[in-house]
Amino acid sequence: MALRVCIKPNYVKNGTRRAWGDIYVKNGTRTGLLREAILFSRFFAYLHRPPPARYALPMLPPPPAALYPRAYQANALVRAPLKLTHVEARIFALALGCIHQDQTELPGISIPLSRVMTQKKGGSVYETIRDACKSLMSKVVSIESQTGNKKRFTAYSIISYIDLNEGTGFLTGNFAPEIKPFLLQLAEQYTHVEIETLLTLKSAHAHRLYWLLKSWDDVGLWEVDFETLRKQVLGDDNDVTYTLFYDFKRYVLEPALRELHSLGWVVVYQPVKEGKKVKGVRFTIPKPLAQLGEEGLPEPAARTSSKARPVEKQMSLALAAELPTLQQRIVTRLQKLKMTAAQIQHVLDFMGDDEARIAKLMKVSHPLLRDYEAGNKVFDNLGGVATNLLKTEFPGLYPTLK
Image 1 (cartoon, rainbow, N blue to C red):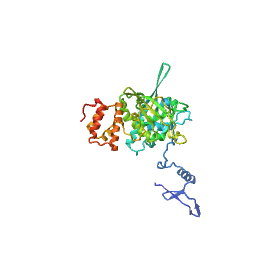
Image 2 (image 1 turned 180 degrees about the horizontal axis):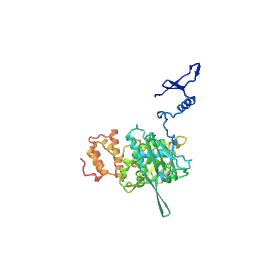
Image 3 (image 1 turned 90 degrees about the vertical axis):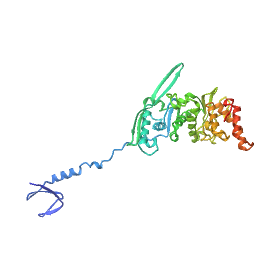
Image 4 (image 1 turned 30 degrees about the vertical axis):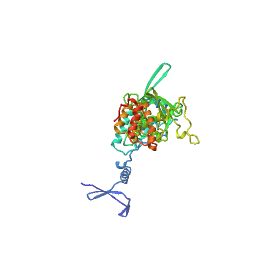
């Protein structure tokens, strides 16, 4: 026998007003009023039912801590050998921005992925950041010290944990706890930089050189052994890349300095030689723009007792931010002197990495180029005159140049 349940609004039946929601059960020909308590209990349960799943609000991650504008490192850490890619250098700089010097413990790392790489989102961007995170996890910084005649070697990991979450759009992690004395509550022998300035640099070499030079800018002069500088920038596990100063200068040092010059920080360098071999580099470091005197002039850098070398022999990049490499300058000079491509290549092969020869070539060829461009003399065959000049100045260049 079928049952049918219906809910009726207020109405009048047999002279009696019925309340809204009275339920009648029709069973055949009989109709009975259910107790109002049953109705209200069911109605109450209906009102307090859980909301459908489609109305559930998503769980949002907690807001990240704000990044601080400056990054700090102890000088011992800054000057330790460390090789980073450009993306790794950006992650490291942003991670340092999570630290405030008033804190007593190293905070967690929380970096928006949009700050690591500014390109549009995509698989290749994620993979690039992921590979950089993997590499950072394996980075070890070696710090050596000596007390009397006793040496000490200590190796530190930088990062102990990294979580790259494309869903939340954040890179989170932790610094290795042992690295704390080099990053937190630094009272002396430390370096600080503006993070936004670091993020404008376009190469890893510029990042490393910027940190290194900043650690000496209070002195104004930094002389460093070439092999030490090479390891500080390229890492101490690299014994094959740019071992010649000429290559290091061309592909690492000069491009990095050009980036610093674009910031208005005109650092000048000179090679320090032992015989014909470059054994070190001397940097003259001006005060940053924020530390200039009241009249807008930089304070003089520390002086040395040695006399300055002639301008032609200085490997200085202070002339312009787009100054070409030394080899390119030779090519440009000889092209202006109307020498052929074969003759120029022969001269380059002869010069090699000998900076004394290169400086001499630039010096002896300058008067000839000056006379030609000023019209002081008329040359029927300028290329021939230039060739004979080089043969006289460099007897080993070859008996003849075609």
